[in-house]
Image (cartoon, rainbow, N blue to C red):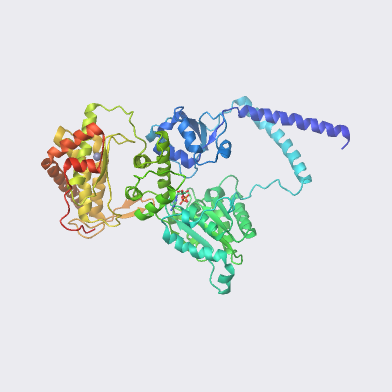
Length: 638
Ligand code: ADP
Ligand code: ZN
């Protein structure tokens, strides 16, 4: 190359650069945008839909929108809460005006529009392409040319430069967590003692692989953690790495299945390469079900790309034999859909269930999460909180603590007190209070009697759990709430307790009928609960005159607890008998509820009046109004 052509080339490059930059600018003139995690977005929809302002825009990949200007401060505080100050700018763009975008989950959010509708959030759906025609022509002719040019230059530079760094498309995106970064230990993961015990061996092995090899024991290769979301599976895997003091590489199953054909398989290869190079270490695959689904089970005759990835994974695990010191840990909440080949010996043959925590587990998790820097007030009783949060996962509990801290900060309290926790718990369950909701006096009166009716049932039916709180402050979609405090964790319910629960559910409507002589629509959810319990008593638990049989075979989604469908495996006559038995149970309970209310009419009125005046009543206040709670003659048999 002589001198003049070289300077020509340079000029061309400069011009091309300017054009490309200009086009880039043209398409990217927008306010700074916060990249919201998809999971956080879903949390906002369910727990705090009011934070969004205006319309959201949905396209195939992204959800974009703005937080409501009144909420920006709160949201900002929430985002920055756990971030060291020097990192603020990398989390929130400077001059942030509330714009965000979140990527859509291509697998799981097919019903996002229904969720948004339910939460009352408005949205626009973007048509696939909105390019003006002129730009389209420009884009399809000139831009590729420029890109090509740029690529040529880039490549020639790369080849001159050291090594060959271009074209590393398929590289797995496993992130390296060296122990100095995130030292999570078993102490941070609470309430999952069985899982920890099962993993202790893995740690031993990682620490002293020689010992195991010498004795000829078969070394665990793959560990599968199965359990509902938010139960600490990721934490456990990290803790294993932390305890054994080895590097931790993580990748999500959904990272494998994206973009170009063939990338997934090559990512798997890279990932194992990485592991072998850095042994001993832990490779963690989250959402294994995204790659590991039953082969040939995809919609429309299987998903080739995914199958290739899965096959590659199986091949790599097979050839793993001679590599010591690399342990594969995977997590899933859908073990039922996994390809059986993954679970064979030599693959993920160690399976550990990480279930939702029980009451003691919840207390332990709360203890971990309320350590400093949180300032907890003296009146906070973690035992009571643990009892009042059945069904909460570790992540829910963390979320609750976080909410409580925010609430305390918002009301300028020096410490987080029980009131904050209580409110936070209700928020996590049902969304924030809606004090602004306009309710007529008449409606308020009906709600007060309805909730008082529920509360009376809890008070006067000795087999039921006692009252915890009764309120007529609307929250989420409910106009009022009566909550009970389970005295102990129960895995097995007696018939009497089930009946007590149905009576409790019916109490609200019966009170309305007695006082107003009217029926309203507010009791739908109560009836659903009552009916479903009664039906299960008949069809699953053999608690009716139809005898100790089960009726109907059901497909349940493990862990998610949702029934996917029931197959009728009985005759039409039996169906009629079942319906009648269900009806009998509910009507029997209805009569009992009516009886209790009619004999305690005075108490009902006092309680409703107190609710109208004070809005929220707690256990002691209810007991004070209704008198001491009748006790069971003998110890309840549970
Ligand atoms: P999973 O991988 O099972 O979905 P994660 O490990 O990602 O759940 O947990 C999410 C968050 O919930 C964690 O960051 C942690 O703060 C909290 N968490 C969940 N389970 C526990 C637990 N057993 N002990 C302490 N914290 C927990
Ligand atoms: Zn009700």
